[in-house]
Image 1: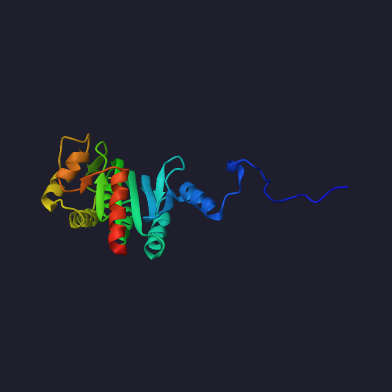
Image 2: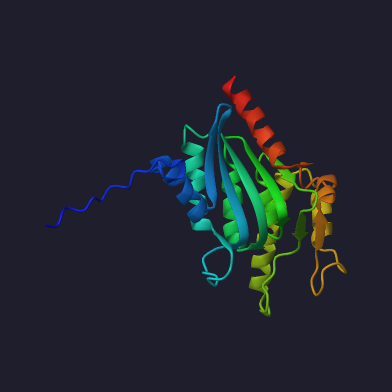
Length: 241
């Protein structure tokens, strides 16, 4: 006679085989699907958001491209700002740039958050990654990390009408204004780095590394993961007092 099948998880004495708690499953899904996680400790709760690869905007990129989708990041930021149990935000950046409008949208949301925020540039924070790096209340960069500053342009498209030049000029002005308002770099210095010739092959712009990014005023300080977390915990403690 057939017996009814048991649909419950098998019981084992091995610690690793115990059924996962709902919050553990949620954390795993957060990391795999969104590249983010929330870490709780006695000092406070910090949400870690990773922005990697290309910033994907309204156009879908090929499936083999590593991307950060802005339609995933925007609601996450809104939820983090509203969540009573999250005290601060850590943003890990390693991006080659991407969609300008999407990148600026993410940067504007980060800059408008009331909670303590810190960005840490690891590997690279290129192109539209520059506004994303300076959007946090404290920006840090690893000594080996690089940032590419260049004008807005379309690759492979010949611009042939004054309206298009005007449109790109306005976008570029938005980027310059945002970066200079959210960092210590001057408009003159940022524009100089953006329009520099002779450094990038077949392009204008500049690549700067950790120390130079700090010396120029673009990034606040050289830092590591422990430095970034330390800053957040200090700010969280101040808010709790």
